[in-house]
Amino acid sequence: MQRSLLGKWIVVLWGCFCCCATYGQQSSTAELEKKYKTAISKKNFKQAAEIALELGNRYESQRQFAQAIDAFTNAIAAARKIDNTALLARSYEELGSAYALSSRREVVRTINNLQQAFEYYQLLNNTEGERGAARVRFKQGLAYYDAGKFREAQVRLQEALELASEIGYNDIQAQSRTYLNRLQSSLEPPTASRTSPATVSAVATEAAAVTEEARKLEAEIADLQNRLRDSIRLQEAEKQKLRMSLLIKEREQARIQQDLARTEASLQQAKEILRLKEETIAAQQKTTQAILAAAAALSLLLIAALFFMIRIRQANRKLKAQKLQIEAQAKELQAEKAKSEALLLNILPREIAEELKEKKQATPRYYKMVTVLFCDFKGFTEYTERHSAAEVVKELNECFSAFDDICTRYNLEKIKTIGDAYMCAGGIPQPNTTNAADAVLAGLAMQEFMQKRNYQKRLKGEPYLELRVGIHTGPVLAGVVGKKKFAYDIWGNTVNIAARMESTCEPGKINISEATYMHIKDRFYCRYRGEIEAKGIGKMDMYFVEEVVG
Figure 1 (cartoon, rainbow, N blue to C red):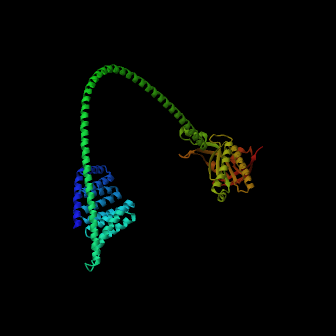
Figure 2 (figure 1 turned 90 degrees about the horizontal axis):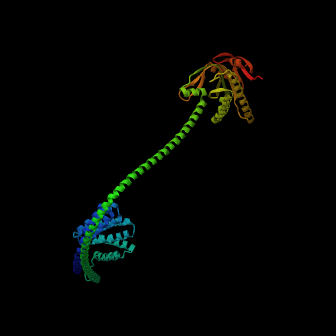
Figure 3 (figure 1 turned 135 degrees about the vertical axis):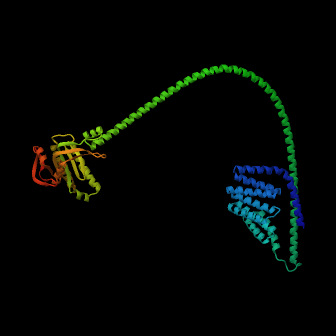
């Protein structure tokens, strides 16, 4: 009974205190509502959540629990937008407390929201999270206690005590022990006798506890009364400040009115002065405008002249740069043309190349006297089997390069190479009467080159190749065939007979036909070989060239 009366006094005094404070807080809640909406519109969800928490606490202090619940719910929604664990934990804790304080005492919602807060506090892993977890467990214990679920209350309060003890949270420790002691006495089974000494001791202990609680409640009432008086004094002081502020504003307003009157008089004087100045300025402006017009015209002329001078200089520089560029391109084209001509001359005779450049084609020509030289290497197939491809190509390149030089020396035209066979001809593209002798001299020079090369190879113990040379003189048809990779070539029975002269030759020798012999017999010693079968042609008189006469 005594505890109930004290509780009623606390409620009455707290109500008085809240009513006195409500006047000053109404404007604050309205401002907070406005700030919350502004933060939401700007998508500043962290600020919105913090404002909603503050707004909920204001409503809760005014015992407007429905509005407080709405505010805390808004705080949770804003905190979820940014996934802020700390704000979510605080918001759920405040929402659970608001449900506990509401007139309906919704225990289930209180417990559930506090449980959500507990889980978020555990995710923080810091001091704030540890203190929050202990505090929420204590509030859950109180909710179960108020609902008469003493076993659940005891479990939660015991957990709160343990959590608070671990981090030195003294306030929660003390309150948890107080309620656990009450629960212990409520949960203990009754003794056999009502008048036993233990019962008397328990009753005395309970009475002492009630007396102590009454004393604490009286102290709380005195504290609330002091706070109420302080609040009234603060409000009176605030009213006095407002009155002083109004008085100052009234004096300031009177001073402003006086200043306005003086300002109006000054304005009138200024207007008159301004009118006189405007008339003077108007006269000056007419003169100035005439001067400016003349100056503007002159300036435009000077600017135009300067512009045209700049454009002319720019055009000259551009033309000079273009000229240099064209000269550089002409040099490049000339160099490329020289390269192309050199490449073309390396492929075709000069006369044929000139004809191709002028007429885009080369007319085939018939020559009555041309000497064709064929040569190849004996045992070349076996040589390739015993050597690498690189070694074979290197050997052929060195020999054929020397043959190219010999052809140039004796005025022969290289026709082509086929495998290890080398073909050249004299008397084309410019006809002459010395082509038979020129070809024989070239053949002797080729054999001499190969003999010196083979001598060096024998000294080193390296394998070597032996050259066979066949020569025949007669008519041929010469020209360029194909569209790609132009090639100057010759055709006719003379080419076939020269090939047969080479195939029937002995290594290290020069085998010539009777037709060639008739042209060179006075200049070279030749040894008659007799009639020898030439494949596809029949028996032919053949000669080995031995040496030059004299």
